[in-house]
Amino acid sequence: MPLPYGFIQTPDSRIIVDPEKANIVRTIYQQYLSGMSLGRIADFLFEQQILSPKGKSRWTQPVLSNILSNQKYIGYIVSFDDFFLAQGEKGRRSNIDEDTNKRKATRYNSQSVLSGLLVCAECSHNYRRITRPSGEIVWRCANRVEHGKKFCKHSPSIAEEQIKNLLCEKLNMRTFDDQKIKDRVDRILIHSDSNLQIELQQTEYFELLLN
Image 1 (cartoon, helix red, strand yellow):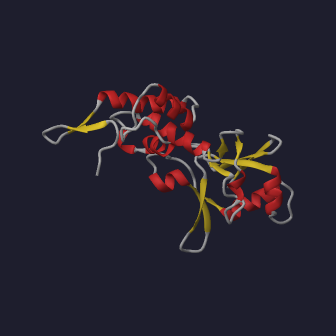
Image 2: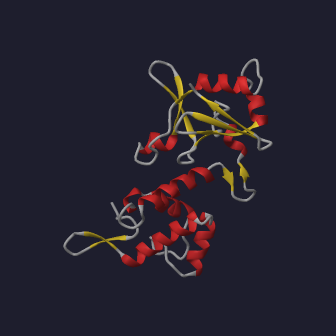
């Protein structure tokens, strides 16, 4: 398996950091965290005549995305904090259309209207719908599900029934109505203490506490 970009193997088979390429990796992280899009970063690297990992003049967005997600850089090329921030930024941008700076309409295409609405306040990743062996449906931070507590330490699991009941209560719905949720709710931030901060389309919000 080829080494990640930024590392080289010495004649005696040791794996070490390539200083020049490591600086390029750090630049990619810095630019991404400053708000630059993957496409703009690719343009910048092209303008600077920095070749891609395969020696091509143009970097592709998937290659840049992989660099921003590679845990092997932690502690060797990028700090844990920068890596963590990059994952949160990727989660935030996953539902944003970079051309319009608005949320993508596809957020409601899953089986649940809550998909794309529930966002972890700690790491900014979306929550994922999970069915437990008991049949209970809960929502958990996707970042924590995929990477464990190392990258999202305090996000709680929330029962779907509790979320729906609270939405009905605060939005004055007698029964849970998918269309009203689509029309009124922009996103729901889930905090580590199980508080739900509901942001409405008109930028209003409610703070709910799950007891």
